[in-house]
Length: 74
Image (tube, rainbow, N blue to C red; front, side, top):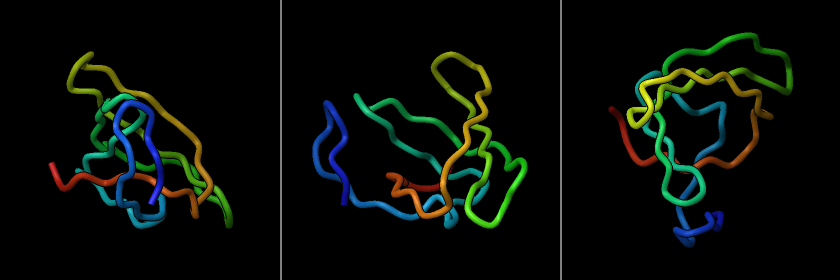
């Protein structure tokens, strides 16, 4: 479990467990959808997120063991 600002305690999964279409929540209740995966190394991975609010794509690099809040599948 992690504590998201403006949300509180939430259940988590490791970034490496995310799949295409997963809905992920960040601080202040911001949600994004996993759109694709980029470069991957032994410890890190790139995830491209789609924001339904802004209709934009964002690429972020995470450690594979980073705890993330998955709300469900889109």
